[in-house]
Image 1 (cartoon, rainbow, N blue to C red):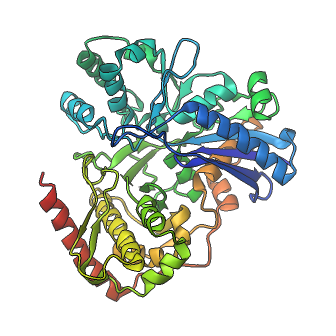
Image 2 (spheres, rainbow, N blue to C red):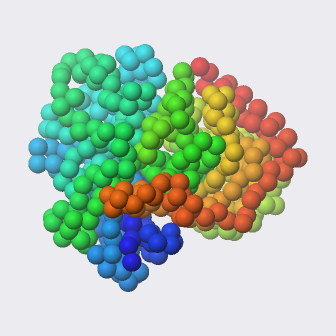
Image 3 (spheres, one colour):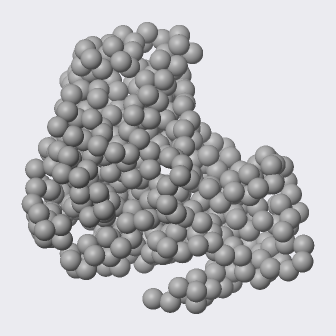
Length: 494
């Protein structure tokens, strides 16, 4: 049997998935959970790259053991990684410090400085603001930094010994020209001017040619084989950011298919043949990892908000959903602005969550749980409207991520978006996409004419559950959405 191994190095854990090249079926999976470093200042979100390294070794060995497969059956490996994370390595390629993550908001001041210097918005979550923060706040660590990588680049380096970056993930650094698909010399010069130094360009890795996305990154080295339990010489594809790999794993590699990913953050993205650049910078104009572009909306608050309710009441999500079904739409006037971690869309990195319109009886689990689902869905719908204004068309809307299993959330989301939503059978779309990309690379190296669309037809399966929007709920959530936006704009006037 020929297998593709997909690894997804995420914020809450690392996942592994084995994909059978012949049938397109998932034949093994494993996961390893971890959290953020504790004791940091408010708004900081960091993890140590060593945590990811250990988790990758753990899930590879586990997925092989539980599936009964041999490492020699794995013909290719693909890596998905959380975007924007700032991995700094010293001269020995050891991490200089923990990596600041996409959800770290303490660099908002640096992001504003970069935005002013470059003449276009640089979101707080992007890598460039974290590098400026490091150069300013920890100059000794910046001086020790010889390489700057993203999380998936770091794992790729461990696997192959090659230090490189592909255009999809690179386009989320804030140091990249997404139209020309190359590092932005002007942005790099502006960064050096702000730090009153030079040398950022020398710290950036080799950029892989975007014209050949099917080309491999390299082969598993003997050192990596011993550490991770893989066979020496196994092919390693380029991989990409988690959103780019999720696009592959959810079928969003041709125009008209829009993916909504419901995880710690919420993302909406679709394939585009030309770059879509938002003048306000709210929609990220990412490149895709398989050619083309991937305009993307990201909200920072999604399942983390419902998780706060679960943790606060000590109930499971099933019981909370049952309780929330007894609460009418609109929660009898309770509106949750869900910005527990600041927010990217709208651009409010220092915002906090707010419960508005509270009355007696609102502090019950079902009410708060429904208010959390409604608030996050209304905020997501606000961003989707922005995507539509920029010309994105919708033929199919695919749902992925852990929250898609919740039928009430699907109903709320369908009504807020005014669009039927279709969950995919495999919710771990980033790991699936990484495995699919690895097999695409393997087929190419084997001289087989297998396209990404062929793999999409073979590997991506939809469920039978299509959630159609309830028209009465659509009208109610349209009114609630207008109230939501007015409250946000009133609290945070531009």
